[in-house]
Each structure stands twice: as structure tokens, then as C-alpha cells.
Image (tube, rainbow, N blue to C red):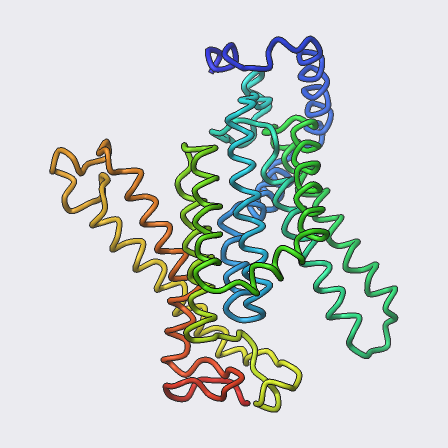
Length: 361
């Protein structure tokens, strides 16, 4: 680890040692609160900031609540995660436990700045909060709109700050890592809320071929800038192309039309329909992941004994791109297609083919 620290590109910055020293003192001060119970609680809370939590949430929104919002959130988080990984490897800044191992109550193998947990919590929950505020305040009730807004935003702010606190308590980030993550998230959200809707309208109005070209160009740009990561550009490509193909060939709506003719208010599917969609959707993704790992280059492949097909195969990265691109395609197009075939969807053109699990029109 010491050798890694000596190779840092920013180690020539005069103020950096002071920043690190200050950050370590902040962490020491916070860890005065340390107890086994509190540490366990902090680990549970910080686990809520992992990508393994955000991805199922996004897919649940896409499949069961609102496919358009699910698409937007998916693209936002994928770009945010890619940018975070790129900047971590660009700056290659150490974590606090690199200097003082006793500070690390958990271990992280990646570099420190910017904090992914801080960045993702803000990037994900601010759009969700804006959406929840809009939905909740539109509903009649005894509670006023201002009070509802305050509750939504207070909950989000508290969660974002608490997520940052866990990273300091566990000794895996300096305070400056959190600030960098929040700053990066704020920039992404400015793009999301200001030019984002105009960009979305332009892409939505384009024909299918142009939409696919835009997805491919973005994935190619991401791969060209940061070739070490083949996963996130592949998911983005598959997810975007799948969504465009789905909308043009077999339109899927996560929610049904109350009056069944496409003009009425949209209603959420029943709980059992959402549950079956999630089971079918996630099992399909797991099956594809398992099957392709047995076929594509890698140590898990049936053909791993072939010299050019093992873990160090020259085709390994291409195989990862195919794997995760296929998963993205399955999530946005394959799963909705299966939902329609199983009768789990009521679209504006009436019940989907299949039998019997769809919500009432």
C-alpha cells in the first residue's frame, strides 16, 4: 500500500499532507463514539449506499412504478458510477486507513476521492424526492403541501448526511472525499434538471436508428475515455437500446390506465403483480448472468481450459461487455416482453397477451 501512496499524482500538492492530517483528526474525533453496537449500525446504513441496492431499486421502479423514470434514474446512476470510477483512478488518492490501519473499521479496495456513497446518495435520492414530493402534494389529505415537502426533503437530507457520517465513522473516507462526491453529484443534478429535459425530448422524438446511434456513441465515448471499465458502458448501451426497441415494438407501461383507453389517470399494479414481475425479472437476469459466464471467456467458462478462453484470454474484456450489455438489454426489453407474454401488463391498447395476472384495467 505504501508503494501505491508514493505513486499518487497529486502528492506534490503542498496542502495535501495538512488536509490528510486534518481529516484523520476528524475521524479520530468521531470514532470516540465507537461501540460494537454503533459500528454494526453504521455498517448496515453504509451498506444501503452500495450499487447492489440502487440497481434493484431502479429496476423495481422501471418494472413496477414508472418505466420512464426508471430509465432516467438508471442512466443517471450509470453515468454517475462511471464518472466516480474514472475520477478515483485518475486521482488515485488514498483512504485514511492507508496511513493509519487502526482507523479502518471496514475495508475498501478502491481509491478514496470522490466518495461514491456520498455521490450516489445525493444523485439518486434528490430526483426521487422531487418525484415523491410532486406525487404526495398532489394528493388530498389533512396534511398541507408545505408540511409534506418539508418531510420529504428533511428525510433525504438526513439520509445523505447520515450516509456521509458512516463513511467517516468507519474510517474509509476523508471529509474532503465526501465534499468531492457531493460536488460531483450537484453538477450531475444541475445537468439533470436544466438541460436534461430538453435532451430527453430531442432523443425521444428521434427515430429508433438515431436513438440506438446515440446510445452506442455514448457507450463508445465512455469506453474510450476510461477503457478499464467495460461494465458500466455495456449496461448503459444494452439498457438504452433495449428501451428504445421495446417502446417501438412492444410498448410496456409499468402502470395501467384506469379507464383503459390511454386517456385516464394511471394506477399502480397490484402488489402480487409487482411481486411476480420482480421475481420473473430478477430470476431472468440471474439465469442470463449464470449461463453467459459458462460460455464467455473467463475462469468460470466451460471452455476455460482452452488457452485463449481462460481468465487471461484476449477476449475476456469483450466477453464482459457482451455479458453486461445483454443484462441491460434483458432488463429494459426482455423483462417487459416476458411480462406481456405472462399477462402481467395492461397497456393503453388493452390487456397484454397471456393469462390472468394483470391488474384490473
